[in-house]
Length: 116
Image (tube, rainbow, N blue to C red; front, side):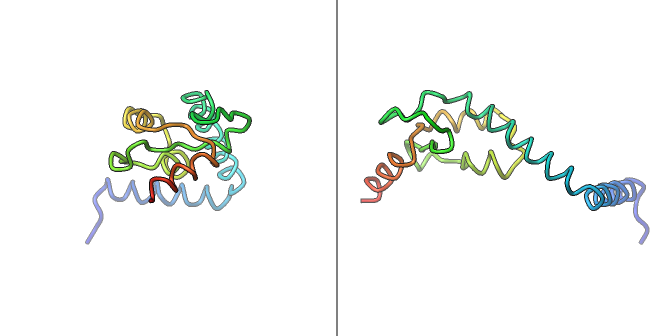
């Protein structure tokens, strides 16, 4: 069965992208890293006051988002940021508003108390 013109064009586009990715893996990797870094900057601007419990604010890498009510959790903030296109959408902002920024130590303590 012959492909429709649209299917044919889509196949050609996929092949063109695949060829580019094979020829320029360094560009692809650099672009992805740059995109993640830019998204992280936007993400950090949204909540920058440090840990809500102890006030720690020295390194954003040590801060995590904790869902105050785990039952309301629709998306994982970290997945949204690092494993998707990560553009800030209303869905993302709504999910972020359900969270509290905590340092890693306080987050683990809170999670341990909730598990009991």
